[in-house]
Image (cartoon, rainbow, N blue to C red):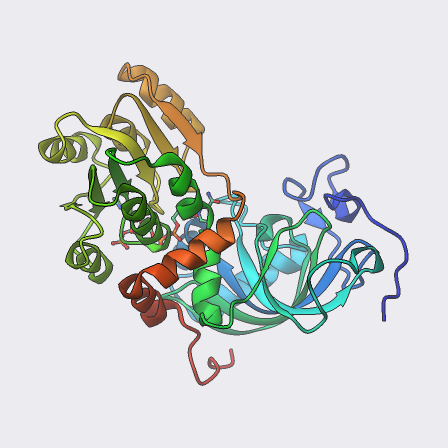
Length: 357
Ligand code: NAP
């Protein structure tokens, strides 16, 4: 039963507690009360996927100790009413089930009990956690018992029946990457994906390959010949694999220019570490494009780095939202059995249920 009849602000401004005048994303604290306004959706939350930049920072801070990671996340959410990492500024997303739909939203294609993934950042999602029941250090999945509120403007996706929810959670978190690649890549281009063997990198490579067909050249870059990097080569998704540390801008750009002397029309940055802006810029040709999907990107380093080396490149920020991004990301999995198998191996929800913390 919906107990609240009043509509809140479409973008959730009514949920901001502090500081006054901010919006939910840049607010310090949100109201996480699990009673929906007439234009909100209340969800029971089963799991969080912390975005890679945030989870890497929390893992390092907590020395990879699952108990400490859980306490750290609980403390953040209790203090802020949302999972917003104050160091990286990033969040992640959740999967759960719809508990209640505000009466103004009754016409949407969603029913109480539906399993969904949020497609808006946890940095702006009112979240209340009653318990953390498991932390999967390798995947960044955190099993929880709690509630979340989706605003009228929020995007969400019903969980597909043919894809494991843990895989969907991992893929939908980075859905903007393959969707943007769909727009940016044209046949014949030379494309470099840095951080090619991570979640967004693998999906970006698979989508780029589909757009290129057998034309152009696709170069994947990662710091080691990992299982997923090997899969990208074996499946002929990438034409070349370059093993390099992208923080070493000169070495990486030299290795890339050995493979593609005219450099790249498009460079896609999917890394989860700081300090790779200049390498991305140097791998692009003059008048090329650099798409910074990574949350570790520094505007200052990118802007001043490009100026310093005299490169006129178009630099794009990885907008988390792109029209149809969820559908494009999930379809990328369905189109690529090897990519889907990789995601299943590492991101399918652990069974039996995770150890209680
Ligand atoms: P991920 O799965 O952890 O992958 C990170 C990748 O970066 C891996 O391939 C990793 O290689 C590679 N890498 C790490 N250090 C490197 C180095 N020194 N040189 C070259 N490659 C390096 O991360 P993800 O989930 O794909 O996310 C990637 C980035 O996108 C993160 O910053 C994340 O926060 C951000 N993100 C952005 C959005 C958005 O809307 N724009 C949404 C979600 C996430 P190894 O695994 O071999 O170490």
